[in-house]
Length: 299
Image (cartoon, rainbow, N blue to C red):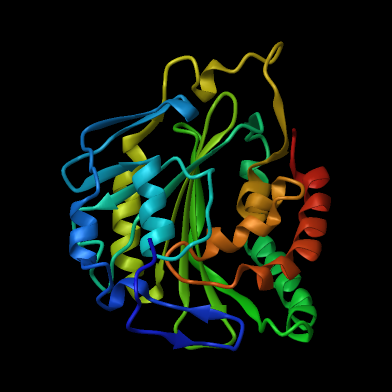
């Protein structure tokens, strides 16, 4: 299903940001509103068996399972296919068809138990500077290839790790090609026995207050099942990840060797972005956080 988009903002010839839901869309007589009505929303307690986790959603949120989540991300909002998506948490307000709509993409990494022994040692200002430098260093190569620039403006919400709940959250402000309309990339990581659950939201920076409030509400609603919790870790038998909390913040998906291309989707879930250009970040950031891993990670 491919919707006809009536509004388009060209940032560069090969790097496009498109607020898909800002305009009416239709295909074969189906409007955007009819498309949303065809989705099977769920509420209340939501089991995510692939991650051995669950959500206890209040009446402010609804959930779309994998198939409908991918329909929204790929058919409605134009993202490339991604089978790693497990679901989509959608606020009841604003509606998916609203200009300021946002939603939370649910994925899971089974890299193993992520040690949090480095969490209290992290200098977030230093980490931010390292990330910004790595991205700036990669920009000439991206521009040479015709893909424009990417800049990490700073923390939209500084990182915070709750050692009791084993939950980490932070948000970054990102600029593409020096456009004045910046992107908000908001992340939650919930640590478990065999990996971590990722909740990711992307919106315009103008929605930072609304998204932050929503993500703060989601934090206590997200838990691993008994037996899969962080506290259930068995050091004698369980796989241990090769990185710690610092890499989750600084490297994100770069922690998975060879999968850095997917950071393009991470940064732009609800914006049409030519992902190839983001690939040119991979070398420098992957190298940067490969070194950081030895310094900061107990894994």
